[in-house]
Length: 272
Length: 272
Image (cartoon, rainbow over all chains, first blue to last red; front, top):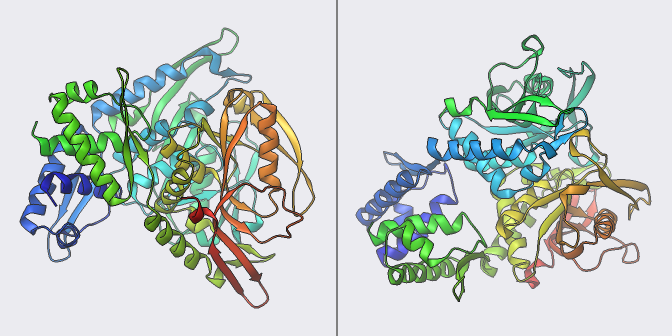
């Protein structure tokens, strides 16, 4: 196989397996090339990934070593995406009764959810994460996207238990803004005790739902390794029950009488 | 930029944008190379994609022409994946009360859902599809995966309307196996009238839920372009209300008293 052909095949191979350790002998055998050639190829791939702002190849040395593709998107890329998202969300036609914002079209685009996942995965790149957690329904595509770049499984909490899930652990929590008591359940066998978990959701106001997930994780002796929300809404500081989170955008000054709304970048851009 | 470097960058670029038409002049400008060189590069990429069994570059000729990466996974790849899935699902520990099967761990793996998406996208590669539809919750990751390879948006029907979705269209339908009347809603602005829609779900018994989605689509004057389910369960032929579907696996002879179960490949392998 020519170098040019091998580079195409190897580029696909590493992109398809983010954070998976791939040994040089494996590549060497798969593409029938000397280890020195494979090394050079990986050098070229790494250089181009960095140049294109899509991450880098991490080299793990030693007998059990190899390379891992770490998706880490450049600040430029992230900024452009977040600013575009703010503009899309500022459309007054998105305003729904009660000051809610229609976002289903944005969450319905696989390209957009892929980009959101990339940004969070980049922000959490240096954390040790065993699983991504969300609560049904809207956060699900975002959680999968983040998890696919972090190469970890997704666990989904629900509002109600289902027969197709087996035994569950359930907690009650207080919604931060409405003060209503709600229930959240997680299937027992979906998460290993002691896991380090990244919580992802589409929207956060006071943070009651995210706090609920945090409490649910305590029941599994699991640890919160990071919290990411697509959009945070303004809320009275004193109501907020979640402090340490990353947000892509911040929704401000929602005025449904005058059909106006302001959307600013969240704190994510400060984390990458 | 050297050819070797350009190949890495171009491979990433096309893989990241399945089914998107990219013009030669665009590549030529982006990578500062002659159109003849770009053409040769695309030839190498196409050859390797076919050799690796991950699809091909479709050439669209004419002034508005260019190339599109069509993800189409080889029969070998699909067979291996489906057989592995059957084995995973045959574990008797998956049996839940009522003859249900625990699949959350499999659906929780982004790598697995990505592969499932690839297989369906390959099976539907020659259909014209404008959107992928599913009903909350378990089919969501599969729907996104299929949609990302088909490069179309996802629409999600729900069992109950939410304030964050705006006005909805609602239908009642009869569950095929339990004969219970249930409700399904879809946000009005989530789907354009006349769309060609691919329905994706995780599980099908008699097909009542899928039939519900089909009826909901009628309200939008939308057309069903294809139906894909991860697992179909045995059911009395006369109960079945959905005929024309593609399944990855078929669950047979569930016996929760003797903790035994049989899982066979579904009809997908006959479609690719």
